[in-house]
Length: 140
Image (cartoon, rainbow, N blue to C red; front, side, top):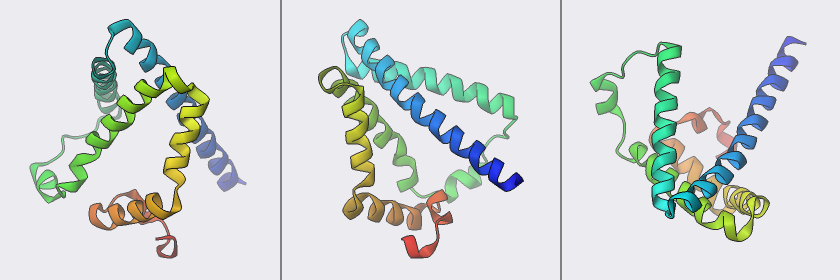
């Protein structure tokens, strides 16, 4: 029974994270209107997110990452921010025109496209040793 409760709790956390994506998109779109720029809204969102992550790191008492760990990482793994920027800017630009439900549906469609996303996730997993590698090999 404990394992079931743990799975339910993790599922609820995932749902909460999904809700936060929709809230973030709406707030970023509102910030775009206020600032008059999708790029400045995205940068502002990243800055506030970075400060929030700094607080999380302090609360969790995470140690500094060693230079050896940084040197061991692949160059490809450092490009996540580029894709995050694409996601944020495109979401900010599309939300006022398509609405939150449509944008989220299209984002999920993009994430779910079997012919590209799963293949790409598996490819990235093999090259970056990311958490995707925890998936059973038969899925990739």
